[in-house]
Image 1 (cartoon, rainbow, N blue to C red):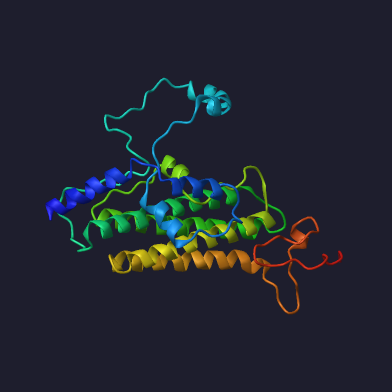
Image 2: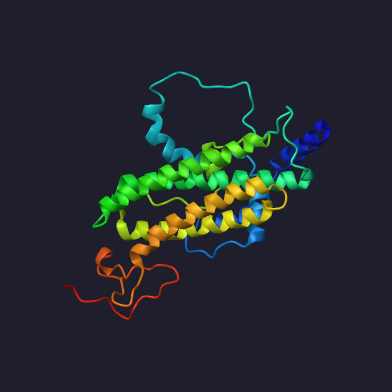
Length: 285
């Protein structure tokens, strides 16, 4: 049992020190738009199984941002340091204490950890984006979206906690650090500033769709090696699907109303992926 744990630890540490070309290509594509085609199961698993290397932002790229925050940052001289190395992003350290043997072998354990860690990262990314939209929602649907996004934030927080604790239960550390989210999430940032209601509906409809498909792939990956993890991921998928429905339902067409969202979007139909706009918007009442 101890030998098996050491072997898994070595494999995970080795995997966390290299950046996969597949991961780099997909991350660049995902950052472009939430409307990109959903990644294939192979691409998702490639990203989940390979950690990004730790690279510092070039000084030229961070100079402008640094200048804006220098005043606040220099107001305190307190140094925050640790004797423990930062490690890779993500770092999933394997415990040397006795844990329940899943009987999945080294490869199965690696897939299990990767699926859980990537799901945790995406849930945390969605947490941040729901809270950002909750604060900055604007327009006719401001108040109902303000309340709905708070509900989503709380639900995502619970799912993230469940997934993180599953990692610990199987004997591996969870990585919820900000840099891990930035470096490995497949969900791009939501725009800054005030967010109009139509934009929020479209953004979250697509973001939830993407994460739901990733979690679905993780369910398939873990169902044989760790049924407990697979069952937990099914609960997450169920929740994400519900949140996605609650967003797209507000633009759902019916037999009596085209419901294009034109009244929310400067008299233009809302461009919702998979829903073609009519020839022209209805006239103002």
